[in-house]
Length: 436
Image 1: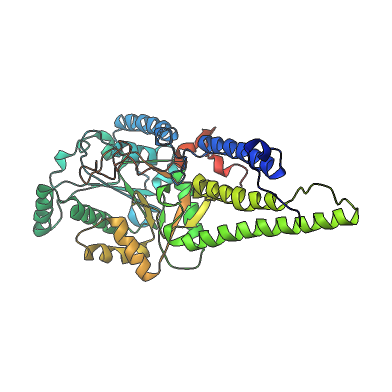
Image 2 (image 1 turned 135 degrees about the vertical axis):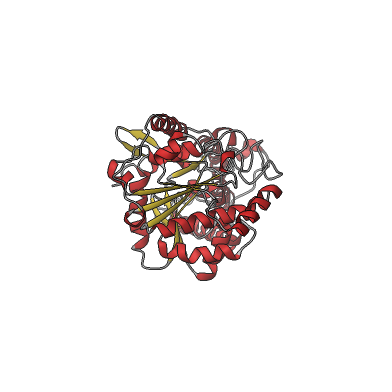
């Protein structure tokens, strides 16, 4: 075996092969670190995540301008298209519950982005239901807006509810019991869409913005989900990536993979060392210096390899293992309920489950039940919706969890959505280039 004596000074270290190897490694490592800062700042699962740049609205601002233009045009149109299909003949019931938010309202942008760019046939087969979530609908600034009547197929209020239920809603409003009321609103709207007889039910929150061509992409994704051959609860049109990182419960897997990598590198280097020694002996190069010495093996396998493994994990799971475009199972960590599409069968099963709960969040209630019932949940990648709300409709959310001087609502964000770009009459995404 090739002997290796530990150098006693830095200058002597740099004259050895292990020393020069370590120096080259440090140079490359610093370069890779800088590359990670440049390339992975949008990945919330990465140590190089930079909130000051990552939360920049790019494509969503473009869509907001298009939605606003569409709404302004709708304000000048006094009548609905008489050829729209009602209820049972509709391909999709589009349900949006909206309440007055402090400050800026977003529902016109949500509905405008969903409607802008639809073909006449697509719009005619979409049944849009807008729930004004106030016991006094006059409280909502949009209630008398011309576009609301023009673009929606049904404006839903609480007027037809039984007196007892109406009074309970009034009590929740007065007590600011947003969580109970939010569950009721979601269930009430879901039931209304279910009764419409539409083939699909899309529940969209009022502070979202949709990508162009969201409708045909959603229908295509639903076909894929339906072809999987097992029961599923919903198709998710929005998810936030911040919970899709390296999960603590998987640490044994990560540790085993890391140890296997170190062992594999060490084993490969030892094998190369043996080949090197045989070559030297065969050619009588007994005095030649060992390129793959014990010191080199120690440096590469026990210093360089663990450091590269560390950088791999620091770079972030979504950067190292990006989600490929398409329809993916997402049973955990997707968050939140900004855009979920149900079949009538799954909606009919979800309604009683939501009614059983008096307090909580819709997405958490659905997730808990889906886990118990072993129902799959799918998500479209890249996300077809972006969350643009700065304040929650469920009250003040500037809490201890709201780091980086942002509200919790502002941090519900899909970073990949902002990378969409419109090219001609099509909308594309960097992660889908080169794919059919």
